[in-house]
Image (cartoon, rainbow, N blue to C red; front, side, top):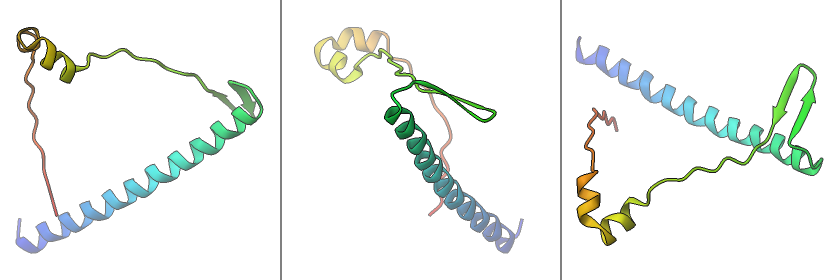
Length: 91
């Protein structure tokens, strides 16, 4: 692949990343509008045309790895799992 072709690929990548950021921001905005309306109607389920919306609080329990590492470093080390992946950075 020539330098010019690679430049075009990188340029396209940057354009799509910008579109993704804009789309994610709009998605969040629209979700917040729906949540706000549901809260104002004091409901956690609503039917709007062919769409069904539900709003639920989801709780999850996770290990505070920083606190565990500080208080019980041997246990932290015993259960530490290393994972790896490739990261591409384009600036």
